[in-house]
Length: 447
Ligand code: SAH
Ligand code: SF4
Ligand code: F3S
Image (cartoon, rainbow, N blue to C red):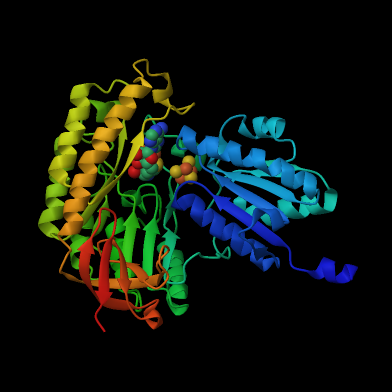
């Protein structure tokens, strides 16, 4: 009996906050754990190991982590053998690990973004020596290739092409917690993609904080557009996407590659952050409103069907009503397909934390609501234009809210829920779009 209990596979629960970078790290942690014989569970209370992969890009992200950590105390009292591990960007901040252990002494393992590949070693130490392990590495190490990845989807895969960021936008904590830019070798990226294709994946999204500066640190140098062309020629790849583009680095050759490469989808995420040139300067973004609008013009000329999406921050220190109206006007002019809109959040350690002219909360909220209204208008208009069209959809699975329907995306990245045949999951199909809602499209598969 005891033997059986000992042999029963251990369960792990993992919760991930933040962007695709954290998602990918979690898929690797999960891959390593599965290799060790662990099974994934979606139920915290039955887990033998709980991992929280944290984000600190805005204060809200951190508050969520604290709230969730507080709730784990009860579980640990009920099951003293439960191992609790915390990792991710939040842990890279100065004194964070120390503070976490003080507030939540029941945490067993803390590690950062630069050493997550060592997690099995930390886990082993906790189990063998019955101690806690706190290891944060200040600086990035080289890229560790070949870790197993337990991907969420079986149809589309995210492939990181570069890590870190060198841009130091004055509001942003990412460069401090993710280290300097470093690119994976094109051969390693191609190898990973070929393996994915052999497992049946159809869509590849290339990831990096600023994909347009891919390859600058490599020898021989290679540009992002070269990489796009190389991946476009891999047999079996059906769709290629990429994120994120920094407007200062999105060069014409990338726009040309999007236009010319048949598998590269017509979708560009181009964070503008603000429509005011003077605010962009304070943000250290290195482009002007006019420069950005010219770039959009170029994209529309060469890739007329392209969906353009963005990130916008409201309430950055010093933002006047005039600055904000410039942002609204830019959003009206560009007519974004969709946008992630954020209220500026002070991040300790970033230059903007110490800027004096911080904006009062009520003004930030009022501006935020006005911006969302403008964005929703253009999203609805863009979606409406799809009614009556026939679109190529990569079928990702059944719809979350209605499992009699299928779900997938257009090449431009629009979510479509539609009546169709379940045997087509994982395939490209044609769908007639019957109706647009604000956030998605409805349709019927053309059999
Ligand atoms: N590397 C990407 C995005 C990184 S973070 C880029 O440069 O576009 C994702 C988004 O979070 C940013 O684009 C920005 O809009 C937002 N963001 C980052 N720091 C923030 C802060 N301190 N307050 C509010 N939003 C922030
Ligand atoms: Fe942050 Fe700017 Fe780097 Fe994006 S480019 S991760 S916003 S510092
Ligand atoms: Fe958050 Fe780290 Fe991404 S701070 S947004 S998870 S790089």
